[in-house]
Image (cartoon, rainbow, N blue to C red; front, top):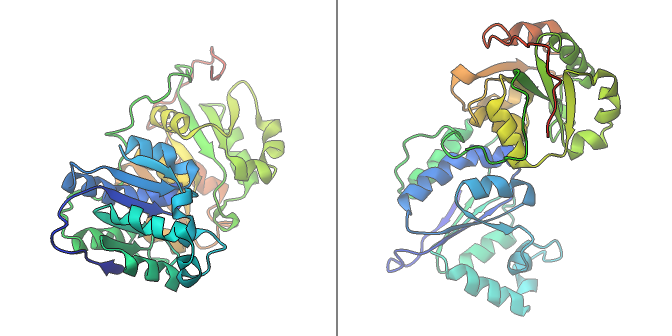
Length: 334
């Protein structure tokens, strides 16, 4: 972790966070943000991030800035390989002036190159460089808590939790009153994906007892999952593609349970308080910091062979949630 402290007279002001991680990374970062907001209650927190996490930034009551904002381009655009090259550009001076207007600038980034550190050294405000996640197998919660304590900020609860801020954000989706579960068969990495054929088998088995919503994002569609799932679609199995994050939160909050890989959407469901069954590669064990009551973790040395379909089926809590479908209503979203 890199730290540069500002001059003592700079006591207050707004905060700029440059965040390069994905959905799951931001959810695990959210407790740090929550504690930070308590400590700087009168400050506005601006977060430059990728567009797909903008909804999470909105419900965290922060201001979203696109990560490709031109004000950040001199240091972080691919063509700017070093600060020395960028110094000749007037944009670099403008970026320094803009960042120095903040009380604190925090870069939550895996990019720890010399150009980033050199830029931070030029700032006169508080400046921090913090990786979004620790080394594989390490405790991500302790990793973020260390930064908060290093800043001298009290931290109480460090569990990712969206229940306090996630109201019914979307009125555009209405769900049948019959219980349903959510299955998300993808993730950002093929190395973390349980085989799609196994998900299809599970969907077929449980759809006789509970409605099934299968969520697909751009990565799953690109990998041809939609074609594989077409034979499964029925009165009680529905596939939803590329829905917005607000709608996903809404669906997760009302689901009886959720089943998926180690993905950002799985982290989202857990943070909403939904009961989650997750297939997690053993090396990512430390990344899961959710209360045991709502997450069943199925750790796998090799997700292509572990766990078996029967092992997953034993963990699906149909009886626990009294998921008895009336059979009268077709599963539909309007």
